[in-house]
Image 1 (tube, rainbow, N blue to C red):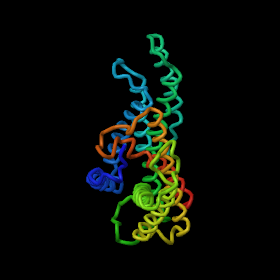
Image 2: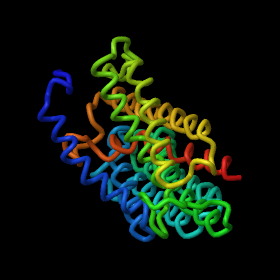
Image 3: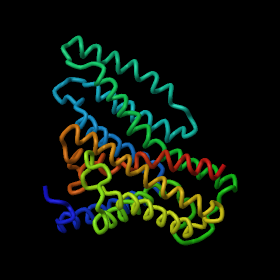
Image 4: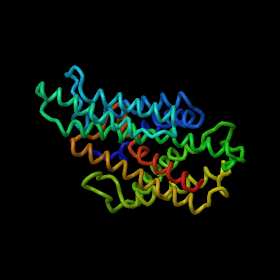
Length: 299
């Protein structure tokens, strides 16, 4: 297979698709409420569809496969996190697990070949995609609480208007900074492979470059909105490095799933970018890390 870096047309297509899509997403993350819920929910459903495909639990011929219950549980989880961001939804998950078991018992009685794998995989998909994406609403709520309490202030005018939610933008910008720097460092300086058995194209220099790029992006954005001073620079650098490393672990996790399933991409929805799961794999891991970081530094 020809390496992507030797195919300029494919690289151009990735940017042509990614830049407008990313700009729209940033605007919704920054200012959206209902639109944010809709964007996240649609993305979750699309990513789940690809996750079922990769893991082999989607059965289009069935009247009501267990994966349908996974969609319902994920949407309910995201709705609850959006409408009640301070609530705990372990009760919902505890309720859904017996429902999954009962549904698969019925399918097993009708001749389904697998039981435990399908229940475990669908439940994992709900927590992995629906659960991790729900942290976007927790981030939004965290900023609103601190701004209203006067413990957080965005004083500068660059990239800052009233009602703009900055905390939800951090995992996006940190991920973009990581991806761009990792691509550059891996292309021009990468020699040692990071984990060749999982992702042959990733290099150790790409990892280091991604962490540096993420940290720089975080610092620049923090200065532009007046966050530096309220949060120490060394904490922001540590955050950028941490999010980059965690994002790449998320990328590698999906790569391992695709390699096991002998697939190049989880889907073809976004053309040269692959599927939705291919686009948000690192973002999924970055979200809870971002929430925990700001929960800690903001007190």
